[in-house]
Image (tube, rainbow, N blue to C red):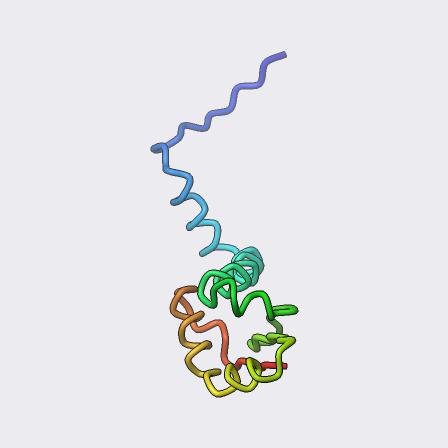
Length: 103
């Protein structure tokens, strides 16, 4: 038994457009994707030296928590929290992070 659907595609879209539409229409998927992107952006932006002292990076309730194993580096990064917030938000393309907490 064959089932025929009367669905006629309007136009083929590139996968990037389909994913962009999905992100715009589903906030939950978009947030989960951006949370994963924050970790990748942290690694790329800070480089291997700082990343080697990073124990964890996690996002919760508009705050980015970064656990650093080196006290001098922790102090230095604490002085640049606003710059870190602005840099990551810029790469995300939204103001997702309101505060950075360095531990």
